[in-house]
Image (cartoon, rainbow, N blue to C red; front, side, top):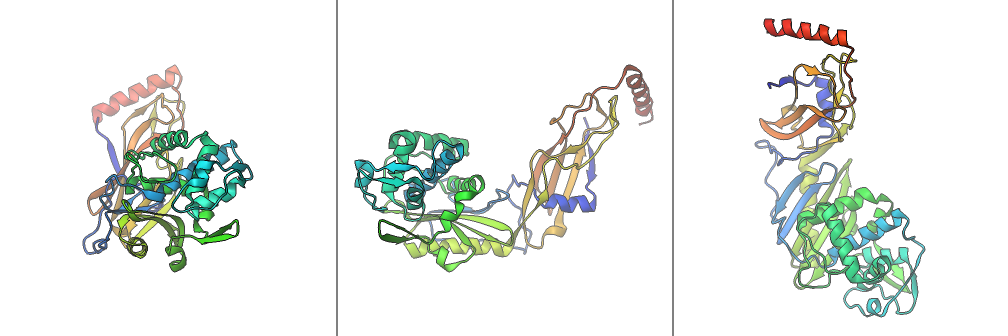
Length: 390
């Protein structure tokens, strides 16, 4: 069946620009944006947190050891359990011998004591404490091994298809790996799902038991727009950093893995963030359920049906490219009742310089029941003569 194609009204088109979720590679208009910076890392990725659009990537699906970036998932699960009401920030968490004996970066908790859960969470995020991570894992799941199972289940739910966890810390282990892309999705979930705890990631230092340790994310001191997330380092993984920054309503997430120094991971991350903010912008503003068209319905109890999108629209575009964007709707002809709410009856397509950016289904925002017998007969007659003339 042929589809009716129409361009969106000018005012509606600009509203649509405000929020398209891009599912195809972002078009780069000729001479508008320079090539991405050269980043000295084994793997990296730059993501617009609102649209989910990847702006820059290299080896983003290469499986690599994450080191302490693992603790992002540990913190995510703890925050999830808090929100579910299964645990509380003020819970007194017992410290086991295993937690106390953990090497590497530590919060310096003592075996046999009890520590407020919120302090352990800060110890994980700010101080990167391996001891705090094990203590929380044992408290949530009973053992670190059982907690790793929860981590892997959660990774699957978040679409982290190239990730597998063995422990809660990132301590080197066989079959413990992730990717830059998966870490970016995890960072996005942390920011989106538990904003009430996200300010911990911007905390520059944390003191426990008389010991003050600084956050190892150097960008927190160098760039006021940076407010997270996590560092990691082992000999095998190199120096890694997942960072996020917000400027003028645009939030970017940068992931660099396998740099050669603490200074390098900060420097290379800054390159990516600066590039994204300089040459791209995020538009949002057209919400799920907003009416985009009201086509005619035949043989229905109502003469029209409202069509729209199921999800909010977010679009990341090169700065200055708005005039080249084109949005079109295709609607099925001769819509006939019954119309089912949520069913697709058309398509929205947005392109830039002739290259399609995204295509999204237009769905019925309401149901339309069949009209009475005589009304349906009349519409059948009208459609018959309409078909003759067409």
